[in-house]
Structure formats: structure tokens, C-alpha cells
Image 1 (cartoon, rainbow, N blue to C red):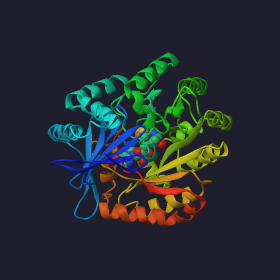
Image 2 (image 1 turned 120 degrees about the vertical axis):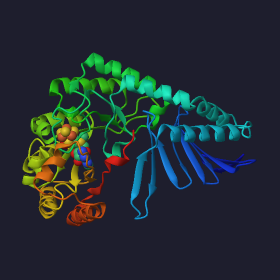
Image 3 (image 1 turned 90 degrees about the vertical axis):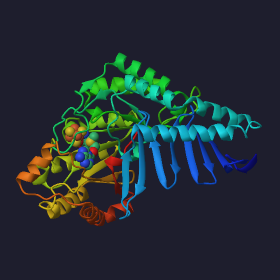
Image 4 (image 1 turned 60 degrees about the vertical axis):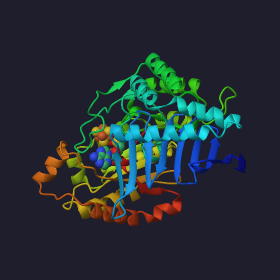
Length: 407
Ligand SMILES: C[S@@+](CC[C@H](N)C(=O)[O-])C[C@H]1O[C@@H](n2cnc3c(N)ncnc32)[C@H](O)[C@@H]1O
Ligand code: SF4
């Protein structure tokens, strides 16, 4: 076994070739001649890999997504079917079994490989059942929160009527009581085990958790602080989270008083994500979002004054060809009215159509043609161009691809 760098060891396995082990505190990555790469969490559960030019990601719900580039260099993301998933997991287990035969002289690697071998296809299937006994489906997160620890003090969306959004139509909005939330946290801790250390932050689900009435919300956040070290070290834990994050809709955001945001800031709420979707008031009505673009500017001002960052989400392609220009122009203008600074993010989310959605029907009625992938890419570039000055203040403008999400 050869030490390549601080955490990387290398060995040769007959029939495979050189194998590298990247041993991180909360993850293990195995790389065979840098051709086959696969990684696992601290419990040994397969998280993803890269084989033959295709990258795979397994979610905690045990779905698996694969990503590759199409002939136009656009990224394709699809969930694999059960057969393909079984094939991938069996393949990984077979490789790890082979590698383990030639690494017995290293206790740390052997220990990690033994953990991995415990999580074969059947064990991972069972783990998904456990996951759904703790969580409602985690439908979407902002891209910078994919590695967060999701907790669900609330389930669903308190509005649930935007014409383009199907994320939470499978559940009723519900807020957990403090006791229920404590029980939820206990089960989440058991589920993650040591792998919890890989999580960077805490994300409060689902669609607008911060709409929970302030008194109860504060109580729930205090429970969180009793259970986890957030933005501080605690000698009882080997890890700490960098803060608390959540979605909030414009209407929910408006209902809070400035002082209430200060309370949230003091309890380590770091960034609030709000879907503006468009700055065009007419298109906004077709989307049936609560609030309005101007109200969104007002709430961003209030949130920023309290010292909390924002993530603003824009729906690229919304309104099709009919709204192409006003969507671009008014979205840029609306965002430029916001007092944004370092730590804020503008997300551009390419519209994904669901034929069952009211939005599709409404656009048909007004004769708006859906933009194709090239036109959406062009619109994203136009909006980015209009916002380019923001980047000099440390504001990030980036893509939010809902099709890429897996938790
Ligand atoms: C959970 S939602 C938004 C958070 C909050 N509930 C709100 O409405 O402000 C997250 C984001 O997903 C995006 N989204 C929802 N449905 C979409 C779709 N069909 N295609 C693309 N993006 C979508 C929207 O931009 C939305 O703001
Ligand atoms: S966009 Fe937000 S407010 Fe609208 S239905 Fe979806 S989750 Fe709810």
C-alpha cells in the first residue's frame, strides 16, 4: 500500500490495476485507474460514481440518477430503472469484494470496505423504506443545499396553487408540534448515523417552513440548537453545521415583521430562498404566485436589513415566446432594485413542463409557444448579462436545474 498524499492510498489489485482510496472523515472514494470512481458515506452506503462517461448519484430514498451529455452538449439527467440500479449496485459490490481481497494489510481500509459490503442492493432497498418512515419525499432543494441535512418541521406548501409547480401536490400542508419535531430529529439522527457529519447545513422543509407562526418557529429552532451544534463547536460533536436555510414564498415573507427576521438571524438562519419567478406583473398573474414582483423587492429589503442573505429564483422560459422580452426586461429590472450583496444568490430555473399543470392550459389559451432548450439557454444568457454587475458585489448568478435534484 503506497501513500500518495495526506488521505490517499494506492494499491495494485490483480485483474483491476491500480486502485486509489481517498479516505475522508465522512466519506470514502475508490478510484480504479481513475476510470471507475465510486464513493460512499461514513456508514458505507453507496452515494454515487462515475463509470464509462456516465455519472450516477444515489439518493437516500434509493432512487438513482444518471447524467451524461447529449449530442448538443446539453446535460441529460434521468432516473434509472430498477434493473439498471440493481446492476450498478451489484457491480460496485463485486468490485469492492475483489479489492478487499488485496487490502487486508490495512485495517482502516478493510474496516471501511466491510461497512460498504454490508450495504448491498437489498439492504439499500430496506433503507429506503426506513427513509420514507421518517421523511415525506424531499421534492426540491436549492442547489447550494444539496448536501444539507433536511429536517421537516413543516410538510408541503401552504399555498400549493402556483400553476407551474407540482412539487408538493401529493401532501397537505402541516406543521409539526415541538414533540413531533423532537421525535423527527431523533429518527433522522438514527437514520444518518455517522454519515450526518458529511452534511454542511440544516435545511428546513418543505416549501415554506418559515411561514410557521413566529412563536412556534422560535421554539422549533431552539430545539434544533439543543440537538445540533450550529455555527459553533460543541465538544460532544465532531462536526458542526454552518447555519439554517429555508424556502419562503413572497406572501409568507411579507407577513413577518422586521424584528422577527432579526430573531431568525440570531438563531442562525443564514439564507432564505424565495421564488420571484418573473419580474413581469402580467406573467406573474398567470403563474398564480402569491404576492407580486414589487412585494418581493420589499421583503428582500426587510430580510437583508435583518442581516440574512437571500436566494432569488427565476423561472427561465416562463411565458414562452409571448412574454420573452418583458420577462427578461422586467426580471432584470426587479432584481436590480433589490439591495443584494455578498452571499446572495440569483438562481435561474429552466421551466420544466408538466402537461397536467394549469400553466400549460393557460399558455395554450393565450397562444404562447413553449421555448425550446436553445431559446431557454439564450434567455438565461440574456438575464445573466443584465445582472452581470451584481457579480462584482459578490452576488452569484447561476443555474437551478430542478431535473438534477436528488437528495
Ligand atoms: C419550492 S419552490 C419555491 C419556494 C417557495 N415556495 C416560493 O414559491 O417562493 C422552488 C422553486 O422551484 C422552481 N420550480 C417549481 N416548479 C418548476 C418547474 N415546473 N420548472 C422549473 N422550475 C420550477 C421555482 O422557480 C420555485 O421557486
Ligand atoms: S412555487 Fe412555491 S408557493 Fe408556489 S406552489 Fe410551488 S412551492 Fe408552493
